Image 1 (cartoon, rainbow, N blue to C red):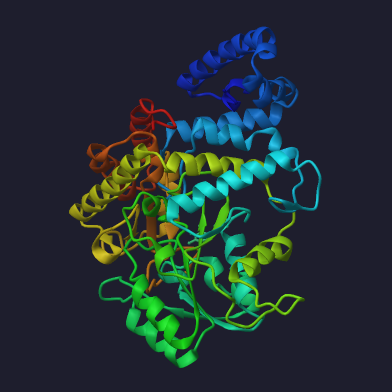
Image 2: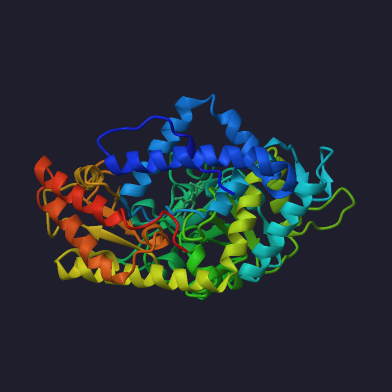
Length: 483
Ligand SMILES: Cc1ncc(COP(=O)(O)O)c(C=O)c1O
């Protein structure tokens, strides 16, 4: 199967001579593919079902596929250090680009509002079975279109408008959907926050407990977008039980490491767990909801027959019809493929390498005098506070200079930041994507050296160009997906 967009890109964008060679190769490959298609597809139901017919009609659409080809080139030539990004396998891509996108399937397997759902029912059931196996969950929902949608469904199932909940402060590593005033979570509900400690960058569990006891939120959220340490889920569950709150963990970032058994599994501690599927878990862009065990909803909500509804029923209704319409069955198929990959032994090896790469990268930064929040990492990411090393350099300027050198990262607030979210004093780095490309720990000090050269002189185009040439040379040896 090769649903490769680069094969369709007809234009070449200078000055990348290598990219030109790649495109020439793909053009040749494309012609061979077409010949093979006409001769072999009638004999091969698998190929016939997946894609080539689509590829031929795609030739009419030059503009978009040219852009997709250019994006692929960008991904190929750079060092991708955005902690929330990854590269998916060809199988995940193929499932996402399949005819399942044509199908409406509002509802859940066996209970749909549309006919013709026999096949997508099986796809969704298989995805649910694999996901349950991956995390030891009794209940899962694979329909949320994204991580924020999964969180929204949990809010809808557990809270009424105006209810109080408690989550990690956004500027201390939390996520928008955990209470930011510009997000539904902060606009529709009463958001309280807890912080990390200035002294060591670790979650301030004393503050969390104090606020929980004083304010009695209905929901407590753990999980973050920029926190590099393990969580004390048991401690949060204890206080949640004490005040009768629901404890939710958003494991979007470390989900892959958790699936591989390298970090604690929040499904064992929390009432409800949400996640994205596209970060360390290395699936398509999407969301999921899980529970270790189902339980009667604590607010006494009943069915028309007067039976107390189970939490699973509230969550399912909150996803559909509460916050979404038809599920993206092509994405659910791609999630299913990714869960299948995550169940393989090599996924654990991959995640071990992600963790090792992150630890070596954090040490390399610290050896150069950079301040890593919390002094290191337990997972795949790290947050660098630039202020001690380059007091005048903002995260915004640093990000721009690094991107110009084909090193992709993102500016990030650091805890107790003296700058605004538009400027920031920090950069967030993560290793899932470069590990998927096959880079091992020996390359991490080299990458940090390249980053440091850019940050030493971020205004010099000559400096940036010299680093970019080295970055492109380094990455020319690695495929997008090496595992
Ligand atoms: C902790 C956390 N939760 C939720 C999300 C939202 O995911 P999505 O972008 O798929 O809505 C993110 C995204 O970065 C995240 O880091």
